[in-house]
Length: 494
Image (cartoon, rainbow, N blue to C red):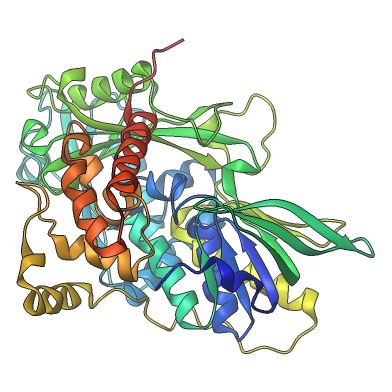
């Protein structure tokens, strides 16, 4: 899958999708699979915003039951089942332990009732139903959690994913069905005819080129760049410090919010916060207060960890795109449902939603596109066809077999080889170090310096594939240093 800016002027498209996060990627895939001529652009990389900074969960949203959002939970558990089926290489069952303590906001009986409802809404599927746990059974599941005042708990299942690769897989699927996909392409203006948008001027952020894209329908899926949102911050610490065996659901002692400790290889991911923010999605990053909140919550449940700021390997923030909320409503109470709006100029805008329900959101949007175009198309098939990428390990092995030098490790102690870099650059449209180190791999999340000291090694591997000269390579390294600081450096609390 090669990036081709010139292809944007190749045809009259049926639909142009702006925004290459999970929502836009899902829309492009659905539309292309229905036989429409599709173009999708993003001003940065695929999944470069919120879609690469999530909790990496595909979940039914058990906490939404507290707020009476039955419809959202029903949709979420249905979509969880779909994604387990069409993306088994990306979506894996994950067991959660939910310990309950004396005096907890959610007593055992209320948790049990919620989990029974969760199972009923999920119906018969791939995941096991919940189990009530005694004190000893909770400690058998998670021996490092706080024992004082523990009265029991429960175990239940949701699923984990690689959010960046989920987004990329949807883009790859769209391209395989004929879509034109161009990252680092910014829409600078729209053109109109008879009151309706009929074209867009697109700027190539990797060069001096411009293109005028013609399309019959336009979809805006730019998430928090077009709507209000709340900030979610996560931290990653060495997993052996916390000692969690699997995922743990906890209620923060700070503010009573439901949050998680999630296994991430050798790391444990703790998150997330949920606070209103006016920060730009381009500049959002963790504050010291965000990090302290997450550390305090984790330390309360895992008291032997005694985590401090210096123990944080990585901290990152994203902005959840939300539909409008009434004044005074707590962030966690705002619905994660989505809204589709058709403007007077014909542009279709989708806002809100969540990673788990991206596919069903996309189906609704493309239904609107088809209605606007008054075309006859095939039905939605995104719940049936498997997402690409399941053969990546085989392709990597074949590459290393044909060119043994590509089996060389890029960074000592991490499982990435030069073949990973080659595949990212030749088949996954990676064009910057950030694309590779943040989104095609997790290098940036797994090292305390976010891979800055290893950027030379990764840049060397990319230079060989993409033909960078010394000046370009040096420029790309400097760009990555700035990107890593922008994404991961704590901001002082105001």
